[in-house]
Image (cartoon, rainbow, N blue to C red; front, top):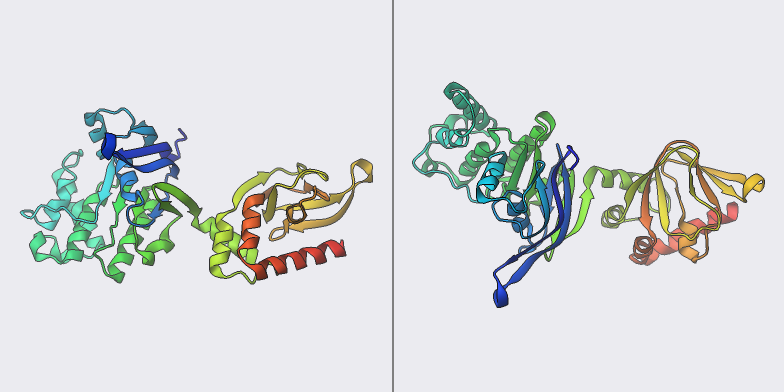
Length: 367
């Protein structure tokens, strides 16, 4: 397992019950979460989000597939070994689960008891975390004297105070107002930057999606999409520079971006040859390519394409073989889309397809 990967799931299945009452709720889920990422998991109620989260947290035993957390394979672990894994994690749940007899600072200190801190360090760190969450004047309050949102922030402080390598959060902002939600997610985001912490958060709160590095969407027990937010925004930025994509609505542009993958090509590598079967659409993020017609000494460069330009669409539109070769002039990075996804994208908007075909025809005529 790569040291940068904090969570790695492969073909994870899970079912509740046995025999006739057995109900499978997770189906062949694959997921990699890297160190320092803030990943938000969304999806309808009952889609399996919380079940997957609790498996990753070692709160349930894995049944089928491989699940590695912080380098430890969870499949087959004893209850004792899973407890050892959980001690390295931070948990934030929708229900705060505070001890009513303890003050806010005592509740936070409770999570530090199993770690080698001096008493003064424990008090100082607990106070600091509560102050960061706006509870500096309420550290001696017991839960019954706090509002629902304040109790949730105490629970969040308890999860964060040990600066765990992995934080698992299930609807952490559900009981918070808009400002408090933003304060909490900004703090979580800061942890990924300053401490290298990794966060997996289940939420329905659309107000905080912008902080995510990736958004994982679950539907009917399966990860339906896994979108790198910044990468998608970069793709949309490039698409909007082209006349053919400029008219896409934000939703259409995002759907297009979600279907694309990143590929690299070193300088002087042939990306594809004239006569090859067309299987991908290419958008250049970085570098430049030469478009070459003809083979061998008869080949001639008819165009040079740079960042923001696209190629490979003609064969996908006509069903014919590639009408030119593409050679990387320098080291290149591409966003690519499969033939199937390309055709689905065109079919999603009749106006877009007409405009796309018009621009491609004009380009070919000019060549």
